[in-house]
Amino acid sequence: MSLLLKDKIAVVTGSTRGIGFAIAREFAENNSATTIVCSRLKEKAQEAINQIGGRVFAAEIDVADDASVKKFMDQTLSKHGRIDVLVNNAGYPFDSHIWYKRFHDVTEEEIHKIIEVDLKGSVRLSRAVICSMLQKSASKAKEGGVIINISSTPAIAGHIYGAPYTIVKAANIALTKCIAMEYGSSNIRAYTLALGNIATLATYDSMTEAERNIAALEPSMKRWGKPEEVAKIAASIASDNFAYATGNTIVIDGGTVLW
Ligand SMILES: NC(=O)c1ccc[n+]([C@@H]2O[C@H](COP(=O)([O-])OP(=O)(O)OC[C@H]3O[C@@H](n4cnc5c(N)ncnc54)[C@H](OP(=O)(O)O)[C@@H]3O)[C@@H](O)[C@H]2O)c1
Image 1 (cartoon, protein in one colour):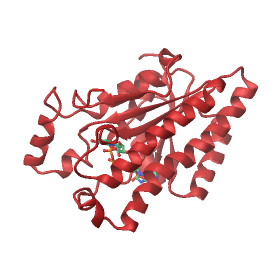
Image 2 (cartoon, rainbow, N blue to C red):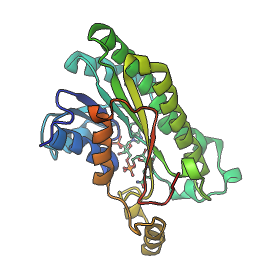
Image 3 (cartoon, helix red, strand yellow):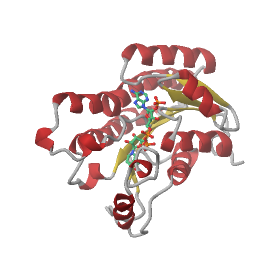
Image 4 (cartoon, rainbow, N blue to C red):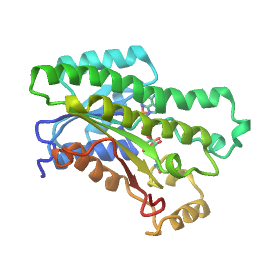
C-alpha cells in the first residue's frame, strides 16, 4: 500500500460506481486515505463501501440540493473534523437522447438538469468545503486542501454532439481556475481532469458494439480508458507530490486532444 494520502480525509461524490467508485477505491485501498463514498441513496453508498478495503465511510448527498449539501457537511465535519480532498465527480447521467439532440432542439428543462448537477452541484459543494478548509488553514498552519473537478475533453476541443454537457464541463474548468487563483495563498489547490472515453456503465455498457468501436479508434492509443487509470492520476494530484502545481487541466484520453 502506498502512503500518498495517509492522514487525508477525502470525499468523492457519485462514488458508488464508475469513475467515482474507482477513485474512492484507489484513495482508500492503495493510498491510505480515509474516504467518504457518496451517493444520493445511503444504502447504495453502504453497498459500495462493502466492496472497498481500508478506512471507508458511506454518506448521502444530492449535490443538486442545498439542504442535502448542508446536512452532508454538518455530518461529515462532526464525524471526521475536516475534509482535505474533494473530488467533484457526480454527473448527470449520460442520456443519449440529450447527447444526440441538435443544440437548438434541447429543452430548457434538459439543460437545467445537467447544470444543476454538473455545474451548480460542484459549485455548491466546493464553496462549502472551501469554507471548512479555510477554518482548518487558520488553525493549522495553512494545511489547505485539494479540489478536483471532473470535466471532459469536449470542454477543451468541442464536440459535434452533447452541447449541454460540454458547456457545463467547460464551466468546471473555470471553477478550477477560480479556486486555484483565489485560494492558493491558503494552500488550497484545484485541478480539472478532462476525460476522454472511459469505459463505465454510463458509457461503454450503454453503447452498441459499433459505437464502442468508433470511440475506441479516436485516441492514438486506440482503446477505451479504464476508471482505474483515471483514479491513479487523481490520487497523484491529490497528494503532496503536486504541492507546487495548481489550476491545471490534466487530459486523460489516450492521446486524442493534445494541447
Ligand atoms: N465515462 C466517461 O467516458 C466520461 C467522460 C467524460 C467525463 N465523464 C464524467 O465523469 C464523471 C463520472 O462518470 P461515470 O461514467 O462514472 O458516470 P456514472 O456511472 O453515471 O456515475 C455518476 C455518478 O454521479 C452520481 N450522481 C448523479 N446525480 C447526482 C446528484 N444529483 N447528486 C449526487 N450524485 C449524483 C450517481 O450516483 P448515485 O446514483 O449513487 O447518487 C452516479 O453514480 C461524470 O461527471 C461524467 O460526466 C465521464
